[in-house]
Image (cartoon, rainbow, N blue to C red; front, side, top):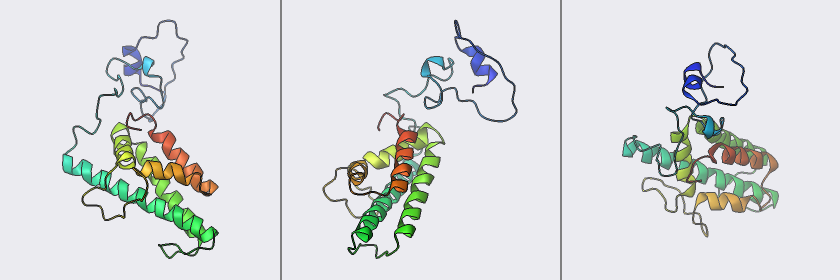
Length: 184
C-alpha cells in the first residue's frame, strides 16, 4: 500500500487501481521488498547498487551495530553446532545438553534479526555487512570460524549438516528479509 502523496507522484498510465482510505499504517513506496521499483514515485527511487544506506550514520555507531550483529550470528552458529553435536551424542563447546533450549535460543536470535531487517535499508545493510564480513570486527570477542571466509558461508554450510527444521525456517526468513540488499 502506498500513500496518496506517493501515488499522485507516480506514473500509473495503463494501470488498474482502486483507492481505499485507511487510518494508520505506513507507505511502502521505496521498499523493493513490498512494491515493484518501477512503481516508485519520483521521491522514492529505491536503493541503487552503488548506494550505501548507512552512509549518513556515524562510523562508530555503524561499526558497533555491525559488531553486535556479527557476535549474534557467531553465537547462533555456535548454537547450531551445539545442536548437531547434541544430536550426535558428542560434546559441544557451549556445554549445553538440551536441544530444545539451543533451538529456541537460535530461533529467537534469528527472529530478532529478521524483525530488525524490517526497519529498512539501513538495518538490512548492517545485518548483511555482519554476515559477509571476512574479518572479525576489532572489538568483537568471538572465535574465528575456521575454514570459512564469512559467517554467511558458514550458515550455508550448516544447512547441509542436519540443521533443525525450525532453525532452518528462521534462517531462510532472515535471508528473504535481507535479499534486497545489494551486498547480499
